[in-house]
Length: 347
Ligand SMILES: [Ca+2]
Ligand SMILES: [Ca+2]
Ligand SMILES: [Ca+2]
Ligand SMILES: [Ca+2]
Image (tube, rainbow, N blue to C red; front, side, top):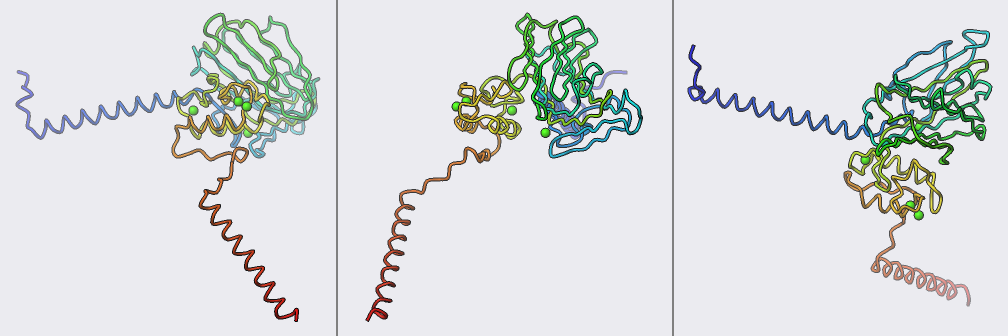
């Protein structure tokens, strides 16, 4: 059958076909834009525990002996004991996981978490009371097991195991930074902002089916674990104001900027997790940095000024004039009233 010449198609059919092509093109462009926007915004994953882990992107890997959990003002609490399955060992546990394959081939990567636990250091050999680990199926493993007053870092089964004492009964910020490119890949562990271990890594990470796992457990003793946040992703550029490395300085960054500001101030080192917020590179995050953050703002409108950096507006010259005139009128009025009283009462 001879092919029909397009020119023979009815003008209405041609218009309809052109409309469909344009619609498909628009949908494809919009979809690609949305995908690129999602990827761009996914440079940092943050779980702040304003809601339950399941609602913040974590998958429950397993639990046992009826862990009791709740949220407490942005903190996820795990109460793990032996009530449901006595006697020890091996009481309550709860384990959460997330794949981090989106960050494969990243030049840099960090994981930072803030937590506090009542669990005893004697629990550490039993992978308790808290564990955070990064690993994959090819042997790379970064593992932090934290108790009330001690933490153990395990980088691989063949590497030295490191123990550090911790101040008990306060939350601690644990941070791992990985530098993959340029090679050779290196790692750096921090406790509360201070480097405690660094060196050559086994290889670039994340790579090859990577995942992060966090876990609470009661081995021989009960524990109360308080998880403040867990964040990971690409290390944001120093002084960029762009926590998520998404090219925008907006309300998504402001929460983290204000956290840095609250924990720092003039000449107080803000720590490795806040280098991106330190615009002038003097290690602190103060109101000078806020001014730079404000100037770099690309979000809608203007950012809300943090209370620490709020400066009341100075009255304009005309306002000063009005104020002085009103004060003069008040003083004159007071003097007149006094004289009037004296005229009536003083004779
Ligand atoms: Ca929190
Ligand atoms: Ca940003
Ligand atoms: Ca400063
Ligand atoms: Ca600064």
